Length: 163
Length: 423
Ligand code: FES
Ligand SMILES: [Fe+2]
Image 1 (cartoon, rainbow over the protein chains, first blue to last red):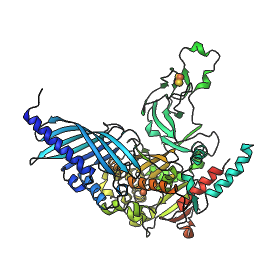
Image 2: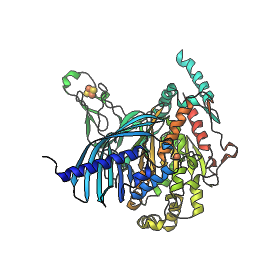
Image 3: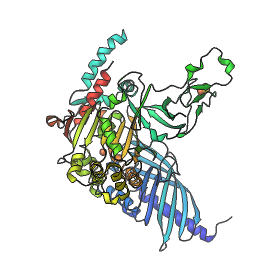
Image 4: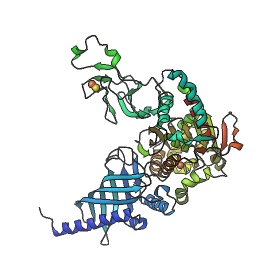
């Protein structure tokens, strides 16, 4: 079934949002990235599979909005040694789908491959990323970003950049 | 000839590599030394494996390890805990590939041998082929000795040696103090582990856990932006002490600072009235006076050699994989009967440790860089002499120093040398 013009517009907006978010992360533009969040945003990277309840079991990352802000402030001190020097990062985004468009809010998912170069060496991170995006004053913002790393059940090297 | 001649040679060698205030860089990089450590430390002494609460019910099991070796921790139907090698006694296949579960037996997928969860071989397919073969000889390998202390399960692959109590020594009191912080006197390990891999030798991790010198620098970024109050505990002015308990066990004893503050739950960066449910249960369990004392002292910061680090609100289990590769398995401690505290424990643990943690990612960076450093030739030695001149004995006879002194590091190496020199 062909996409309706509305669906096409939504996909285009979402795609541009995700590409931009990826670029801000890759380039360590922390403040610009932080501005993409809603006030109730949740940044979540599960461990040991994708479906654990973050209120009951350990996640690699489970930041509410104030902890996202703390994370950004830590980067800005210049003493976040796991990112001094900063990892060189580039990610490829694909398979973008709008899974549910409820008007004010959309559920979106895509796949990403991220190449990291750091003093330790080179690491490739593969993930499926799920977003809840909200339309606020004609702009999209993230209220949830959940990063399901393909190898999240295994032992992982440090990942102190923005995933 | 080789055995008789090699023994004194080996002995001389550890003398040369481990001196009272210096250690040689090759201790972190030489694969032959790593192999020797597996034999003399990991496969001989008591190693922490898991917690009884990870297998609460009859027939529960969970995958664990001793050094690089995979181990299945099981509870049989009578309630006894076993540590089994995850290796089929026929041709060596893995008998268990599931992280955790409940099973009375494990069936090897290769030729169908079935083992009960206490390790005994229950059956082999097409049994007529085994005429005259004694089935009782072909159970799963078992860790020679299994013992637990207040729920913490340790294993030793050596049939003989000091008892777990002898090995733990004064560390038992710290485990008691930890458990007493729970209104029901028990901790639980139920939140699942984060597994953080580093390109570093396991001994850098052990040393770092009670190195009170580094936090002011390595963790300056988070101390600057979060008002945690942790930073002051590791300043040059801190009244906290570092301690060597012997047997390789070391701690940063933060109680002097918490007692000076005299505020219950200050160790957790909060106040008792913000945890009303927990405080009420502690008062009911211990009486107000004792509860207050427990809530002021807080939980220990102790490294139980060689692989269990109890860090106030979480445990770390250190696993060596290769001479330059290690994994830290980390989880939040959960106190039985304290749901309000437990939630905060998990939140703070998720913030601070694991691959993206505010604290641990930076620690990991340091071990990885030191690992690169010790590969270089000049200088060959590492210096552990900080605070040697002010090292002293406490009333129990343990060596202590200022919280930023290298008393723990020296204690770790003294013990290491004694283990490596042992026949
Ligand atoms: S290897 Fe397990 S049954 Fe043959
Ligand atoms: Fe640290």
